[in-house]
Length: 218
Image 1 (tube, rainbow, N blue to C red):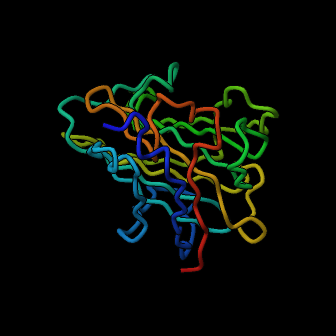
Image 2: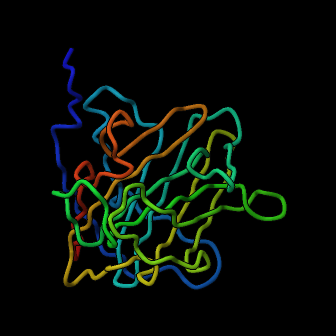
């Protein structure tokens, strides 16, 4: 067995389709179609994915959907400890600087939970958090700028997240159509699914371990 995971040997670039229009200002966010599905490199190391991610872009922002199945218990979500909760952790570099090992002001970490907010703790939660070892932190973001909707199911959940351009420092699809990108879907029951390497490697703070997304017109 190789001591070096196969995921460490690949630097992928996935094409991201343009959305016809952004979500409306109110109501639930409509789910993305199957053509927007993202792939995970973890399968090359024999890790079976439990989450399906879909993503699309628009000049006004990015939408990402997460569907988790196979659970027997409700998701464990604590807004006071979002990084230890069930949900999505998303890293985006709006200027795609894969050669650097420390994040810059164009890099952002956004965490979204399918539950934990609201009076009954049944509403989705989203926050932008600082990236460890960051050279220069990106601007703080008002959480009210983000939009989320979630459907809790018997065996999992569907979580949809809209990230407006105003919440993404440096987001400029015309001038910078390539984004640095990484994700981790954490689950107390099912484990963790990432876009590539596992936590044996410092992807939480090292953009050189992230993948790339190409914003296309299709």
